[in-house]
Figure: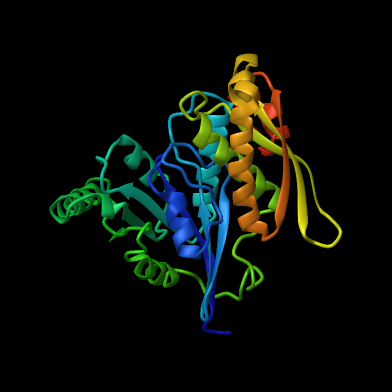
Length: 305
């Protein structure tokens, strides 16, 4: 085991830069929700990659952005905490977007001589000439902010293009260590949190235009029936205002039914059995601005405005 390595890698970036898609590609299975809408990830999610000579724990973090409330402050704090406690950092920078002040702010959060990778994501969305121009700009960016030690890797997580190369480069930065997690798991996330995220993913897809960031999900009860063929889940979908409750339920309950159907299929794929899912809608007024309520909804660390 003397040649074995193990450690943590933080995947960071602005909202909607391909972080969750990259984590799923590296792990080899879906462990975090993805969406083309920004700010989908709210809790850091850890994926465990087990290979013959290393174990890598990749941490998918919320997108860093200018906070507007207690939730925004807490999400940014989560990112900073994860950067500080990892062995290497990947900053996702989409090939189809310009480099901005947000990218510079995130890069400057990486302290000391920690290994850093600037991963140009979504290369499948641009032409070869545009990609070449982007790589030049990223190189100039590293010089301007004194990050010339950073390695630049263009990838398409969607098409698994160069993800193996990135994994190999990252593994070389891990410290000598025995495995930190059991070698037969792909995530250390509790099922409860994963179920809640899949329900929220379904709500985002159904309701994004009406309720972009006003939805949170908690799991009230979950149990596997005797015989192991059916899994029961009771969940609460929290919104901030009475008017939002009506939007989520929809005419004759149509929206809530659609959310439930989409979420149930995702959860069934995860647990490998039939799922009986009940979702209730509750108004938790201004939950995004209330530190105490955020803590009750699962953001257990201290919060500040």
